[in-house]
Length: 496
Image (tube, rainbow, N blue to C red; front, side, top):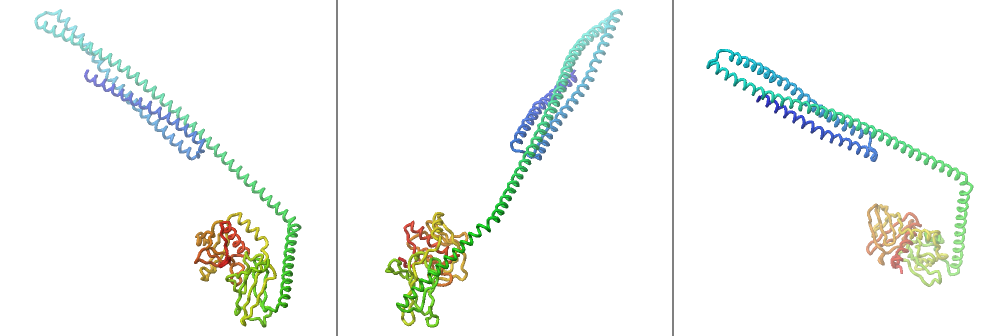
């Protein structure tokens, strides 16, 4: 009885373990599968929004398939446990058959005791037989008690066996339900993955079609632009020689005609001045060059044989008011045979005094007021509206020192200041002030018409050469206009 009680307790503990394992599988497995389903739905929505690639979907499918395989492995493990428990139950049933045989043996023993008692009653009775009867009766009573206990225990074990079988059936049904749910969830996950893969393929196909459409549109637009360029070239070829070239030739002819007329007028003026000088007395020198802004005037001898050498003469240029000629101002630094007029000289006469070695003085005048450069005023106004202008320059002198290799730099003229840049570095930057000086170069040389003198402050001086005469005069006029708006008048050294 004790061994049967221990076996029953062990069977109950094993049944409780199996119940716990199956219960754990039911909760975690279903939760995991539901989590897989939610994850797949989320991945599908993210795929439609973010356009996941096929490779990412394949990796996601592999992860989900691995999770499903893990769940199936867990289910197989639980099924194996259930099979082991069923085998244990069958072995227990076989062991339970032995107590039943023992009960049969007890019944046989009881029948023999009854026969012995009955036979003893029929024989001679004495004390020894009486004692045997008492012992036999007690043995019968004990056998009946044992038999009743065995029967009760057998009924209890039968009831436990029925409960265990019911639990096994329940566990088997739960495992089948779990497997069915896993198969359903796996099929759903597979279908959702296939749908997501199809959506990915559709998105990629749409993107490819869109890229092809954009490429085709760009090619078509480029082809249209090429056709337009060809049409424009054809129109230019048709109309260029007959219209534009004729106009260019006409403008060039008119420009040449005006130049010839201006030179003829200048020659007439010089002849008139020569006639006046013959009345007043002959001179040994004359002023040559175009009398306009942007040109360079030079002193030349009228007779090369008798004229003295210019480097032995003392030269000084003057600016004369063209109204009455009463206001005469010397131009400081203009003591060379060449002089490039400054923008401030426009509309004025220029006079030059040539001191001869013998002490005589020749005084020469221009034939009339200096003319402005054509279109320069409009160019300066356009630069002023822009607010600033950059000019490429070369620094030939810095603080009186002649540069061996004049560097290329940039002169920036804006509304508040003038800057000299060397690459990205600012070499000099100075705002407009009364100490600043700016004028045309007053020395001689071939670059006199392109040279510019700039002193940003006291003790700092630069002699710059610009790319053209027009740039030099535009830079001077623009800087003076910006400085005048700041109530500053820019001029050269000792200019009033």
